[in-house]
Length: 392
Image 1 (cartoon, one colour):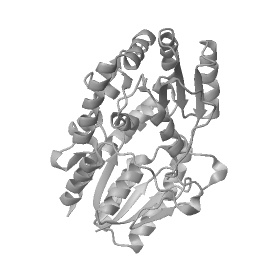
Image 2: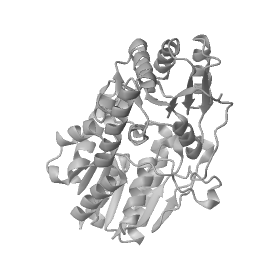
Image 3: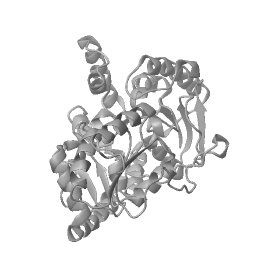
Image 4: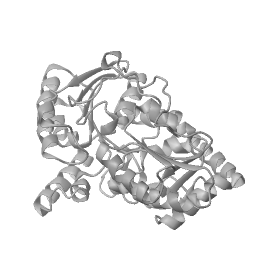
């Protein structure tokens, strides 16, 4: 089976969080598909068997692609449309696997080229337009809503990545048998191509002058507003009053974001009790998580389940997370220390995760079992096998 994967995003660039595209493509290739992957010019090449990476021009003078809708992405997507059309004219594909907004033009090409269409739906674009305040136009929102609904029902298979999005699709789709919930739940090292410079799988030591003999509370991820970093800083300050040797490590974020939250931590008196590393290679970020005594996800907003939650479940370490729907689609008090999103409650949860060894052991054991049964690599492969089988 030959497949064209259309992924309008920087690939591979951890800043652009394209992990789901990488793992989907990796497993489909392992299952025997021959794949052409069409993507933006920005990013590093990766080594995936049976896969050819095809890029549109970089257009670097226009700047880097940012999260959410933008005029730059609209321009780049037009280039993706033209390249997709060219590939379809020259090649015969059994499957076109369209990520996110790529489905909006692939659904019109489907009857012309007679391929099976897979819509890999990581989010609802009309909801993104609202969340990122891109436009208040009811006409534009209505247009994208109708286009999204049509794409869901035109596709031969629809993938969603979390229960909230799955429930949304179930309310729209005419044939629920073609809907597959496949969480972004695997996280093995990305194999960066040797001609791209960095080897993301290579071992990496920690740096940033982390003091030894401390109890490390570690957050790793983006530092966007909804991730709750300000909440984490306030909660950690309260927890540190009762925890000897507690030390906060925050991994990720742009220079501006790091400066902002470093200043906030300093104002809370945490100069000697915290480090903000900024963005790091995947291997080095993973090393900090391995050092952790407690992992945290202080997210305050959103409905999609964060990718890092699955890695945290499988880590063998206690997890502290806010008790919001984004988390509780996967987490419960049986597997994590959940707390309302306020500094006092989150601080108390950090204290419990640091000091109650018996409770930690219970939760970690159940977390490992949950991951193995529902979200492990073997489970991920089975879900994709079912989808591919349905297309044959």
